[in-house]
Image 1 (cartoon, each protein chain N blue to C red):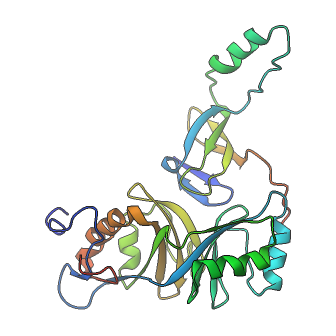
Image 2 (cartoon, each protein chain N blue to C red; image 1 turned 135 degrees about the horizontal axis):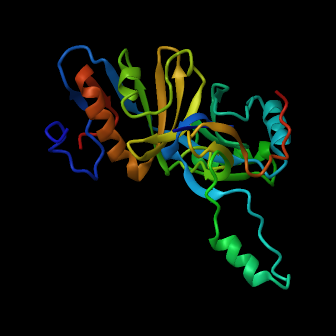
Image 3 (cartoon, each protein chain N blue to C red; image 1 turned 180 degrees about the horizontal axis):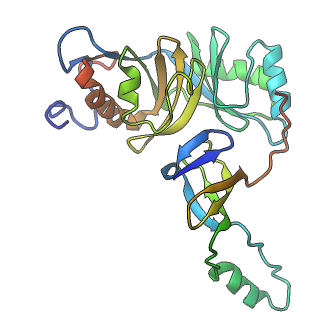
Length: 92
Length: 202
C-alpha cells in the first residue's frame, strides 16, 4: 500500500506509523459521564467497512501527522490531508 | 554480501577501493568532506516570512522536497517549513551565525555539521543501484535535478537529492548509521563495478 503524502508524494506504507481512528474527539473531563466517555474514547473502536478516517504519522519522511481516508476493504486511499492544517500560506 | 565485506567490521565505514568487476566503474561514491550543515525550521505561521527573508538574502527557499543552491549554500526541503542547509568552506558556527542573521531570532536553527556524513553517488548505473533500496521513483520523468526526498533505505533514514543532471545524488546519513548504509550501497553497486573514495582505508 502506498500513501500519497501531501508533502513527500507517493510513499510506501512502511514509512508511516499507524495510530488509528481520526474521528474521535477527546471527551470533556468535567462532564458527569466523563468516566464512561473516556472508557469509550480510549478503548472502544468501530470496525467500519469502507471509507475510514485514520491517523498516520510520516515517521520516515516529513514527520507530519496525516489524516488518511482509506477504504478498509480495498485499501484504496480516498483522501490525505495534514492532521493540523498549516496556517502558512506560501505563494506558489 | 557476506563474502564481499567479510573483512570489514560492521562498525566501520566501508574502506575506499574498487568493488566488483574490474574496469570502468558503473557507480562511484565519495564522502563529501568539509561541509557545514544546519537544520532550519520556521516558527509556526511564519514560513512565508522566512522564505521572503531568505529570498532577499539570495537563497530562494521552496517549501517542498526540493534542493536549492546559490553556489555557497544548498537548502533541501525535509518537511513543511523545514530545511537542511549545507555549506562549503565554512564552519558550523559560521553557518549558524550566517543563517541566524537572515532568519531572525525566532527560527529554529541547529548545527548538524557533526551529525551526518554526506555521500555523493554518481555513474551510469547509479539509478539501477539506488532502485534496489529506495521506494521512490527515480526515473527522470518523476525525479529530476533539484528534486529531494526524505525516506528509508534498508531501514536507515536518509535525506537525498539529485545534485547533478548526469545524474549524481547526495545522501545525508546519520553518522552512526553510515557504516550500514555504505554496506548496503557497496553490495548493491558491486555488480556494476563500484569505486568508493573518501572513506579512508578502514
